[in-house]
Image (cartoon, rainbow over all chains, first blue to last red; front, side, top):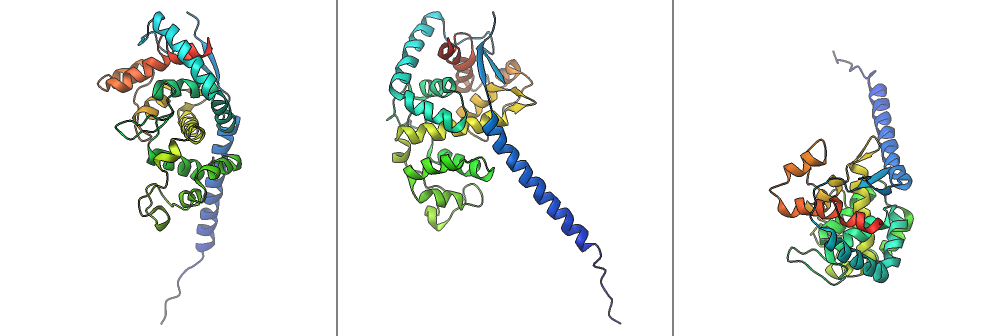
Length: 47
Length: 219
């Protein structure tokens, strides 16, 4: 008798991968924001 | 975000050197001011920081090449320049305007960098060397300062934790290399950990110590 493989977990795994990918994209966009919005004010330390 | 200088009371320069440094910085601004302004606009790194790095690295001599192979105003090595562009792109930090400017200097070689899958990726387009940047590219002041400023911006963002900029870490990595990992919870600890690396230790003091170059550049 041929054993039928359980493939019910596949969509969940796919969704997790998709989520991770979206998160990575989001993180990358963050890096761009970091660069664009960076504002450094240089001041002399009060002595 | 505020960067208050000096960051430490330790010093490399005295008050007399500060006067000389001020004159030298003014000369650099006079000669390379437009380039510094453009690089600052493109990368969002303050002009005072870019000018200070130019002074400490090359004293404003755009043709200088070190024995270690560091080239031009911001003393960049060929691989450092290549890798800075690649890292900026891989982190989606490379802006369209930066791409346009870089392409103006290195043409289609930009595509060779962008097609690399990882650092030092040896491809036919980079003659299996992992790099397409030449000494002549870096001898062009505009290109040199733009890439140097891009690297500074990258290091600044990586050294900013919860809005606090550990600028000494930026300087140490610019001086010792991208993969250098400064250790210490504050500037004094970090300096103590690089005391045996005299060049790196002095580099930090020259820039952000008492009478340091950045302080001179803003006053």
